[in-house]
Length: 369
Image 1: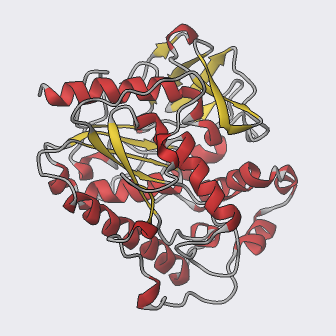
Image 2 (image 1 turned 135 degrees about the horizontal axis):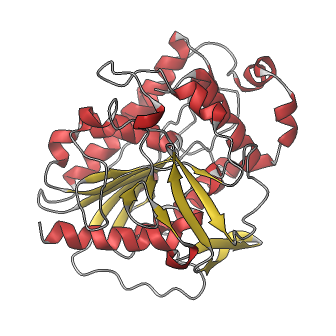
Image 3 (image 1 turned 180 degrees about the horizontal axis):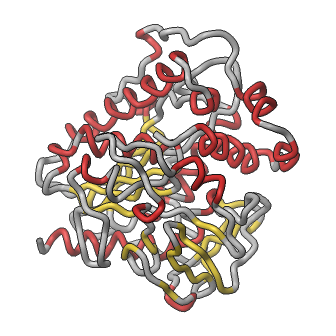
């Protein structure tokens, strides 16, 4: 797990995404902690609060679910699903911003529900041409759980992960052993996914098309060995991991980097900047440069992402010292670009069309392996 300062950054960026609260950057860590720390101590929830993944109500997306936003496509895009599709398991980022508990309720309603649906729509939808999409509700950890080093925080994070693991096992039970699987997450969802790749690596053997661990730093040397999976080195490769963190120019990723380097992976190996995984989603390879012309499409909101269109060939990208640096004619995606030109909120939106094409290539490669 990454260090405290990186998690403070994640806390800030979600607040910015939801409320545009740029003034938070004028305050120090004490104010942020006070605003984020849940009231009281962690309380073990009643068994009745646990999700039952045999019930539709425990899923944001799954085949046959009414009002499933994962089937959305931008204006002008026509979807023809691949014959014999894969199945995607997608884990959404934090959407519950209140301080009244250490873990969000399963069905929070209101703005947290709307935000979760938006993430499914704008991120998981990239995979709907090649797969059925399953997105679990889970008792996500509060921001305070990320910011604090305490027994309360550890228990909250473990509870969230226990739901994700249970949901994944229920997902696996619904699919034959020879059916291909795509894994995807963002931010807190990618943190949970990084744990899942370790704990279920045996179940994924021979089945994984790719794992998109986006918006959370991974070390090739310290994190990937425990998963048994390589970083994706070419676009026609299956059974590998992609990860990136997007910055505009001039980029200043020091807050992320200073918190991350020197922390330890699952086997105790220290994380170093030179080992940070940066996949270029425009090429499907670790490292490298891609011109804007090869970008299959950036989601550009028309009032909101529900009415987004696809801007093709405008945003290029290159991997530079572990981070993904964007360039070209970057469209106005909204007001939530973070200091340091951090485009974390838009990690999927910037490359939606290319992520879609990447998944299509990798599924084709999986079928011929």
